[in-house]
Amino acid sequence: MAWNLLMNGYPRRIGYTWIEFGRRQADGVARYLTLGAGLSAVTGKAQVDSWFFLLEGTADGKILASAKTCG
Image (cartoon, rainbow, N blue to C red):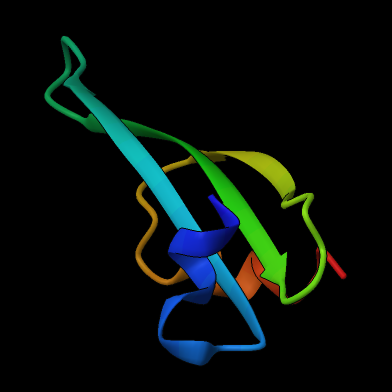
């Protein structure tokens, strides 16, 4: 996966993937759950770092906001 993140000569890249699940409750309220993963690759390092997350609701920019707290 490192080659995929680092193609075109980038020295360091971070990427995310996620999937959102939704349903409508009996009272008509929509509920969402988001599952995802983040990947970080650095030139010269064979291992890609990864982390996973679970959000109540949709991603709507929360992924990047939570990434700042992941270190």
